Image 1: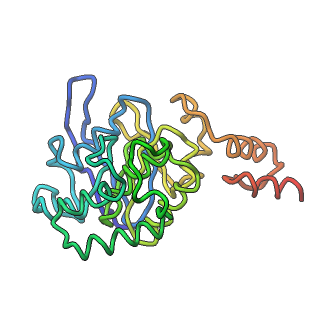
Image 2: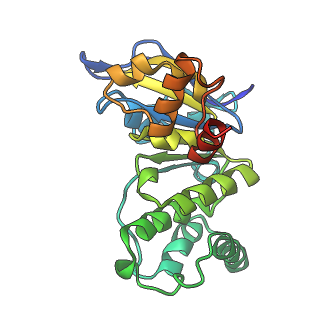
Image 3: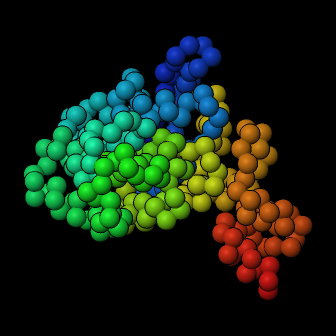
Length: 261
């Protein structure tokens, strides 16, 4: 599958203990990938290179160096979501904020807002003050204020896990329907079930990657890094080892149904 975004021979360094040495990584077009690794493994550094917060002479978008694109094009095509403060006090104003910065017309803004409100069932929240929202809805707004742009590439830095299950599913569904390439940087393996691919990093090295189930089955690497497998997958793998199951299940309902047969 073709890569939409790619790091080629990345040699960026903070110091001798925190550096990429001829680092290569491709993010496949149209895929939802999970990027995991311990704190300090280089995950957020990669995101900062993608969005021009760090030198990025090695980063290619659609086979062209990022630096060769205009800033206006990149702001619409590539979006990385960090845990940043709100710009507004009311949900509606916040959801419009980035679109206005990108100089969308009022009609375009209204159309996109209407779509987001309907898709994520925000009718009861749209006129509320952000400070009154619970933590899950606050982070939903933090993500939607950028997802509303419908970029080609969308990345979230370790805040996806704060959302409730229903909103996670809606975000993934929206991303798939709009053919957005998604990189989810996470510290909770439970959320890998929403992606088709996992990339594992350690000490600024891509140590393992592959389709989600194949990587999760390599539980010795995951556990060595201090991550706990989702309970359903962990149990499923154990039962698979002992021949009780013929495959690994990611959903509790599917595992229970299989065990009851």
